[in-house]
Length: 86
Image (cartoon, rainbow, N blue to C red; front, side, top):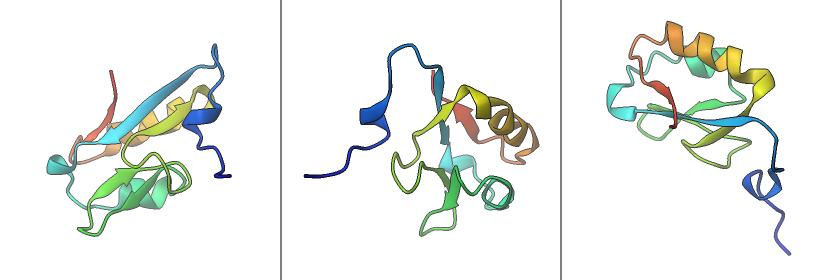
């Protein structure tokens, strides 16, 4: 039996958002990777992408308690490429 992914364990009524990186705009500055490695990593082309423990690649689930951390990273990103999925 395969372990459930984070998406499989979401509970109705729990506040979360999805964050991703618009890779075409990524400058590979590594700021997000350095500051929030739990949510950002570099892909094989040295572009940033979001993740949850190696899952949900470039579609990371962010719970309410970490929204401010992600928003702060969005504001300092030189490529302005970190975005909330609408």
